[in-house]
Length: 406
Image (cartoon, rainbow, N blue to C red; front, side):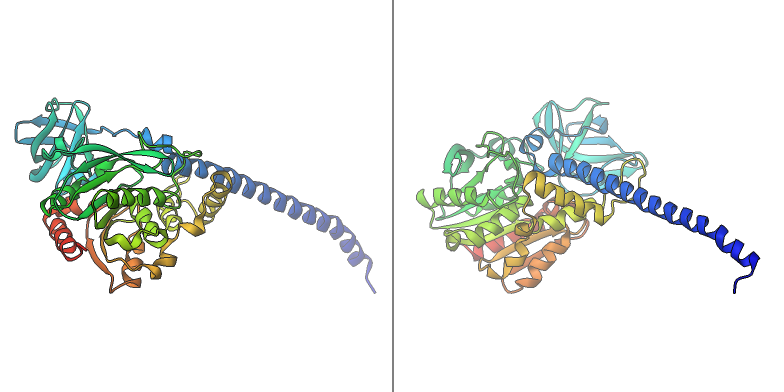
């Protein structure tokens, strides 16, 4: 039996319990609202980021160089660049790089001197006029300008191949071999991705076709104007291979760069013409778009607060992107089907790649050890294996092609 004092305590505690329950309910509601705002608003925001950085054809076509490195002095054979904490690492990394500015293009090939606040490079002008002292320039990992004639003095033809959406402009460099080389660029949407390989291909006598595909500048646009990372673009590559076969090719070697590597892989998995391809060269190929997006998102920070983007928010952004833009994430993992590949592959991967996770190239090499010749380059960023060691890259490329001329 309760005493009077105990009874009074029980009566007093009942309103307190009700208040605590109400407070807990409101706290749960508040947390739910915050979570909805965080994941809903944040997911929408980052799906917009994905659209502009990786999906929109018009956004990719409008890309411009970021001129942010000051020129301190320049001569006919050398150039001195100013360096700060925000200078791209390529500017202080020995290798072969393109250097571009609005009125010209040059190539830097070795560091003469590196000191506090500046770096002096061996330099040669390739187009236009030298940059003025004080002008700002940009590093270009593609390393060669404009077209094969400007870059190498090679004659080439502007040709068009017929594809699913119309006529696709391409550059054609004639050769004597019955094996053709076809280059497939990445999502920077420029044929210049394939230029590094041109001298080696040409020295072996291969006719070379540097193609465009849907949504490229000057090429037919899809109805959505969206990049599909190989789900649709492989059909354009199939049309390019058919063009080569109808113009004298007996066999084809495909070279795919970044997104172009994923396109080439899906072509080899899907196309009726895959058996006509005697070899494929893949450089930092985007074989799993979902994992690539996760990898890139892990390097991003939340606006204002500056903390790392959580994987849960990336997952929501990807889900929203599939709803808004029709991104078929599960179909964009070509590694899941890689056991069906039968084409010999030469695979290059920079181990400092901040765009395509090296782990995906590792997986491709591990899944097909008897088919894939795998060459990694420590210190190389995205599509920079050639830049850091051109001789090594060209030697491996030449050896592979000679072994797979069909």
